[in-house]
Image 1 (cartoon, one colour):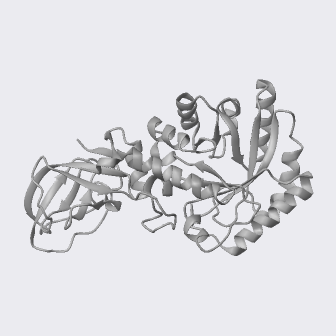
Image 2 (tube, helix red, strand yellow):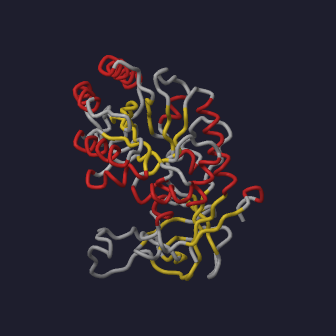
Image 3 (cartoon, helix red, strand yellow):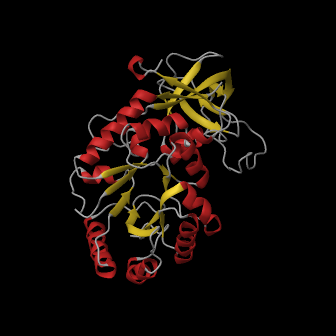
Length: 361
C-alpha cells in the first residue's frame, strides 16, 4: 500500500536548526505546518523543537492543533467573518486586512472575555491577501479604533513567493521599515510583531539582512523538505527530504509508447499523444493524482521516468531502472511542496514513522 515514510528525527532536526537560525538573528520562528495536514506528531514535534506559537491555515487545523497541544494558535488564513466566535475561541492571533472582519473579531473577543490580537497584512506585490501600502495608514487607524482590553492590533505582516512568486528585495525590505514607522506614527507605539513569511526568504538572507524591525519568520517548506523548490536554503544542518512517498509496484509490462488510433482528451482532460519510443518496460504504481502530484516526484531508484497518472495510478518507465523493480516491490520518491501537501491530505495513503538514525530502507 502506498504510504508516506516520515523520518521524524530528521524533521525535528530541521525544526531545531531553523529555530536556532532565527534565534541567532533575534527572530521568533512560526512553524507553518499546513502542508503536513496538521498531523499531530509532526505538529507536536515542531512545537516541542522550539516553535514559539503553533500556526494553522484553517479553522479545522486550528481545532486540531488546539486538541493536540492544548493551546490557542495563530490563524494564518484570513479569518471568515461568519466564524468570528470560533476564531477567537481557537486562535490567540489572526492575520487580516478586512475591517469588517476585524470589527467582528473585536466584538467576539469582548463577548467571550478572551484576548485576541490581530496582525495587519500588507500586500507588498505578491497580490494575494492584504492591503496595499497606500491604504495602510487609513486602515490602521480604523483597526486602532476597535481596540479594547481583549482586542489588540499587534503589528504588520507580509509574504513572499506565494501567488505570483514575489521575491525578497531591498526595496521590499525598505517598504517594511516605512510601514513600521507609519505604525508608530498612527498608533503611537512600535509594532510588537513584524512578520514575514516564505522559505524563499532563506536564500536571500544568506547575503542580505532583514530590517531590524522584523521580529518573526514564518516557515514551512524549508522545515518539511529541508530545501526550497529543490534549492539549498543556505541554512547548515538541514536534513533534505525527511518525508518520502513509497509506492508498491502493481504490474510490470512491456508496452508500446504510442499506438495508432483515434485519441482525444484523457480522463483528466489532457491532450496529446506521447512520442513513439518503441516498446518500453512500464510499472504501474498504487497512487495517483488523488494522493499526490506524481509529476513532481523524483524516484530514488536511478533510471525511473514518469510517464503519466490518473486518479489512482501512476505509470513509470522502468526500462533503464537499476535494479528493475518486480511486482510487489516498492519504489521511494522525494516530493516537491505541492506533492507533499497533497500526500499528507490524502485519505488513501498510509503513514510510517521511522527512526531517522537508521536511515531510509
